[in-house]
Structures are given as C-alpha cells and as structure tokens.
Length: 311
Image (cartoon, one colour):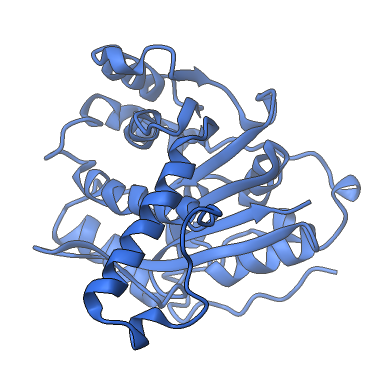
C-alpha cells in the first residue's frame, strides 16, 4: 500500500513530487518497468548549460564551490570504513581526556596516517551517475585510491564537454571515461556509485536508487546528494539563487521534485531491509562570502548521504 505524504507547507508553490510510483512498498517484481531518464525539458536545459560547465564564474559556479564539500564528505566517509592496523597503537580509553594534548595529538596523527595509508592502497571502481560536464568525475579520477571512473549522462552536450575537458589532462588517461548511457544499461558492479545533484532532475528517482543499488558490490557505498522539499529549500535554491541573486539559471530547480532525506531513508528501509547501512547524512548550506558549510540538520535544505551495501 502506498504511504501518505504530508503536503508541503508551501502549498501550491511547492507541491509533493510524484515519487510514490517509484518509492512505493511493493516488491520490485510487482512493479511496471520505469525509465531512469530525465524529461526532455531537463535535458534541453542542461544541454544549453553545457558550454559554460567549466566556467568557474559562470552558471555552474555554485556547483564548483559545492564540489569541494562533496569531495570532503566522500573522502571522510571512505576513511571511516577503515580501521587502524595491528601495528598501530589504539588506546582503549578516551585518550583526549586523560593524556597530555601533545601525546593525544600524536596518537590521532598516527591513526589517521595508518587509515589513510590503507585507503590509498585500494583501487576502487567508481560509477558517477548523471555526471554532467564531469566536475565530480574528474576529481574522483585524480584520487590515488581510485582505479577508474565511469561517468554517464543522458545529455550528449554534457558528455562532449566532459570528454573535451578531461582530454586536456594526461593524468586522467585510462582512469576516466564518459558515455551517453542510461543507468539500467550499465554493465558490471562498482565499489562506489555517486548520484549527486541529479535525483531532483529525474522523473522516477526511486528507479535511479534501485538501479544504482544493483550496480554496487557488496560492501560498496552509494553517495547521494539532493535537496529536501521544504520552505528553506524553495527560498534558497529558487527564490534567492535563481530569482534574486541569479546565481543559477532560472528553471534549474523544480521544488516539486525535491526529496526529503527521510524519504530516501524510508525507501532503503522498505526496499533494502537488512541489506544496507546509513553511514552518514549531513546537511549542507551555501552561505554567501563563506561558501558551502556542513551542518547536522539533514532535514533542511541540501544534504549528503552515504549508504553501504551490507548484503
């Protein structure tokens, strides 16, 4: 049975998105097949933005700034998945409270160095879904613990820009590839799948999550970044960013497509019960002059989420 979604406080300005067809509680086999594609209007909009994708002061400048925070979140999440090796001393008590600061700091540095070394010894396979012009994919491909990144998008103009920009950096040769491809058509499985700033632009976000989950290895991590459906989100992303400050082109966001963080958590509880673990969920907010800041109120505005496939 489909669950009831509480109407948004913005009434007609921000209507509840039609997620129930893809976020329902029925078994996957009972559903009618749905596409993971975006609407023609969305693809046309981003196709027109493609030429300015790598202009740091152009229409995507907020995304460029946000990418720094996205990379921090990804790396911190991955590091937390590793524990110090047997050769590293790990105190069995709160060393920060009972040891001198200098000693405590030295312990923290040794632990961090050990964990970073373990992470850097990995060679992860990464899939970036809805890669656009490649802002995230390029950064991921440069990480020492990433073997290769595949970026997919349905907008040919964006893929062309991504390929052109990547070709200028020989370091990326053999580590980064792009393709105009639907998610359900991707073959193989990956250690890390990213769906950042794209769920709010598709018609059936539940199908994106379902197919992204299928592309994950057991033990792999899905990274999600999108926007809550609330008054704060409408005010910051549409009214201020698009209409007042004109930081983002009009029509980039549609509040009716925003997805609350709890809806994604509930989706995983329904669809992947006993097979997943929410590793982290953080709110992020853009503050003029300060850039993007991370906070603990993941139910307001933009948010990052990391989900591990445990079985």
